[in-house]
Image (cartoon, rainbow, N blue to C red; front, side, top):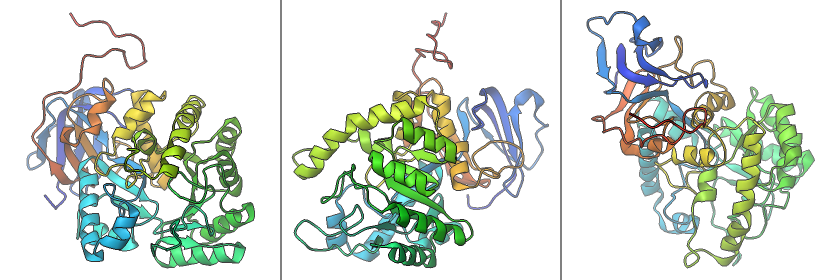
Length: 432
């Protein structure tokens, strides 16, 4: 299943990623080069042609390949950075990273934006077909100031030596750091404009890089073929500084307020809330006290502020913070977006066409329309009735990239429960 071939998928419900109403009896066709030639109602579909691979979708839901716009695929989610840095053989970590890429793809994520910890070689290996994985855009590393969120100095004074953490403390320093990232193959630049929950010596309310430093990184990235800048920004000060400085996206945004939402709209920037990290519980018995206290203090504040941003209809793209959150269960993020106020269709759009816009690939990905690449996900069940069906990898029946089938499993029984509301959020009528 490594070569593209003309493809026809029928007997599916089709969600095209634009927010348009789903087509309940649909057909999708793609040519031998992996480009969609038809996606729409079965009644208007072209006649099936001999020699075309035909797949019966068994009444499942066909979606565009989904985007996770904030991952850390080079970071294990089941052990600490300390353990990874000090106790894991680097060669073993390479193979573990390749396995995380595969699991992420098979969970339905066909494109990722990795924001620290994934060398550009993994992107190139996926593109060359050496390993299976999502299409990758990577920042390679993270730029912060001394004592800031990406400073890997432990409370005991020892540095972990994490290669992707870059420290810079003035305008010249951040320009040099950005140049090093771009030299190492970065597709975008990641900076910290606030402290963080997981860093010992700062707080989300602290501003990290200064305004003039943020502007310098944005300028440096823009000079290199218009590269974007993403900002780790949790507290209000860091959120506002990032947007004023011209970043493309605010990552986390837990302290965002009305002023931040207004600025996002004015600048056309994006919010990537990473709710999987917010909703993931921490065990106080195994978590350092300072981190546990910060998480308790920020969790409810984050939920309230992100819910308000959703209500304000700012540009929101789906991202999970996988590496902090579990790998391979990325689409649980959609359930959290719905819990905080999105409709299922809006959540799917955040992970498809909006994600494609954030990554600058909206002309070829994120939508099931003629002329777009056949990046496809077939799900057993109806995520408009129960968005949670997408979270279980076993419900992801088919995954394709540019018409090449990467995963094909026997269809499962429809796991969707009886609807409690219709697609507009009104109470559903009982079936007769």
